[in-house]
Image (cartoon, helix red, strand yellow):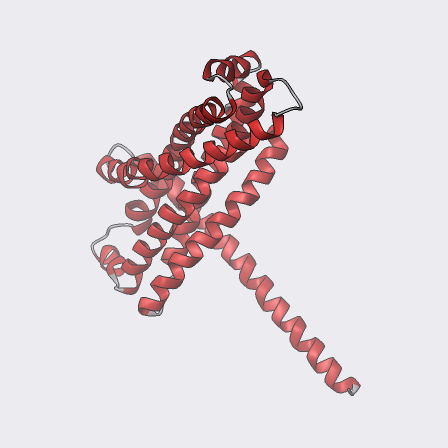
Amino acid sequence: MSETKIGSIMLTLIRLLGRKTIGLISNIGAIFILLGQALKYMRYFYRDRALYIAQFYLLGVKALPLVAIISVFAGAVSGWQGAYQLEDTLPASFFGRIVAAGYLSEMGPVLTALVLAGRNGSSIGAEIATMKVTEQIDALEVMAINPVRHLVAPRVFAMIIMMPLLVVVSDFVGLFTAALIGDLFFNIRIQLFFNSFQAVFVVAEDVIPGLVKGVSFGFAIGLISCWVGLKASHGASGVGHAAIEAFVFSATLVLVFDFFVAMVVF
């Protein structure tokens, strides 16, 4: 291969890398601009309370059955694995503290966030994308209705508020299921599970990190999904891409935020 051809290939790769880098920086800037606008319009919470209450119901209350079902099986897996690992190695009194520590700080918040990234994130992205490609957002602007205030701020705020509440529900359901699994299959009484958990339970170390993660996950899912929907184009295929991107980007950010919050909190 000649030096001229090698140089041409290298130049093409450098240009591609440059375009991707500029696009990434541009997208990050657009996300922060959208965040600033959303925070600004959240001050109209009381005036727009009907919009916020509707999103609390759609993104939070209606997600309760799904979160509960997922938490039952997550708690069952945690209880089975915890009891199995303890068998013939440590006393049963360690069962509650081991399972609860992992579930409250990691499994409950992360699993709930990933489930809601699929349910709420893709729903928000597809809904706003549909409004974008059908020019409903343009119609709002013509009627002097700000799309960020009307569409983005309620959804982001609802996700920030409802996510930690759903994490709490997941914690209760998951821990109770884990205790039940230990009692039914490993003869570890439910009372012993909660007694061993309470013996080392510290709110600041066991509950607060999970709630902080819940708030950060809700913020990430709500903001990214709205941004993906607002930049959608190309008709029906654009709506499909927006739904996929909303879930992929939200789930990725959930894991990224999980890492950084864990670094700060622990």
